Length: 252
Image (cartoon, rainbow, N blue to C red; front, side, top):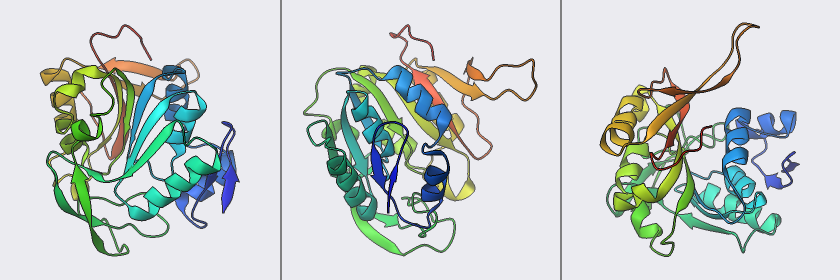
């Protein structure tokens, strides 16, 4: 089924999936992250959608005028993202690749998700009954970025427990990134690859000088929901954190 969004593009989605239900209800998804991407991405920027799923963020970035490298390990999502890029005539702005992202290049075992949670495929162990395991190519982000030698405005990364591996796979190119919007997951079944909120924070903040920000939701009328700088990333299950290169003055 094809659903409209309120951001100027349409998306083919799997009917009956969680994402389809959310998109049908609000014509948007992850409003906090969507709003942040819309504020940070400028026309002419180069961005990466790591774990692009059906291409929601890739299409959002393209709609904002950016050039985008979109990557997904799930072959079904890869094909759907390619379809959605063509559906919205973004082929000249978005390149979609089929690969898992890791800290080395090899043939990796990828655990396919269920139909309902169709975005939960992972190199880590599956949380529940899925659709089986397949072999997929694991690639370094630094290799995939060889054709782009300039600044990288934003990397949005949501790859279900392989985030730290993919960040290591950036190599020296990590200093070319202005903003990293990373899903930090502290779920036991997704942490055996070594990725955790604290691990990601140590790598980006302590080792590479990025500043960490987390969205604080207001629970009382006198409070204001906002992005707030934090010393380290923390997550009870999964929570997006924004990491800003120390050379960038912009605040979220």
